[in-house]
Image: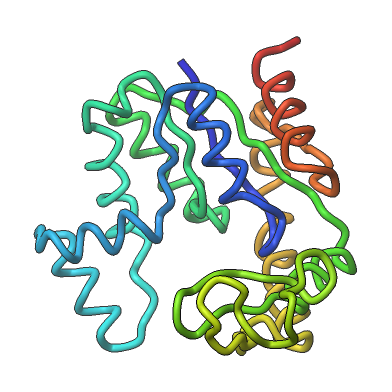
Length: 216
């Protein structure tokens, strides 16, 4: 049984690690963006409430997000554990999550923080290119296309998303740092916080996370 939260700044590799850990541990990766979109698509009561905020361009309130997560955690595939990716992001959300888990007779086992130096993240994110046609991802340094700004797979145009531009990346990282540091202390006091160096190849990072949560 492993119930865990993955923390980490944009570009740290949370999504990749979540997928790899989910496959290795046989538990679902629950990315909050995905379950929010699913709840909206299904038209559940909570999904309809969330949609009203999203349509207005507002953030979905914590209590609605926690309700959507609660419903997801009670599905059959999450009974042996889960990996929460993207929530909580603030202490208020962490407290709401703890209260909800207590109400359904659960608690978190581990909070794993994938830590990567800001300058490394700026390089990772600001070099990213996306194909307009097929969505394939490239990197100007780490995985460049054969022909500049042209997708190897479909020949489509490669472009840089606005939120991957360097100034925007630095702003996103600053917001993460400001919101997340108190969260680190919150979970450290609970004795379930683990920090992992994310500036290595994905398999090495995964193996260290597994060692940390399995106590080996």
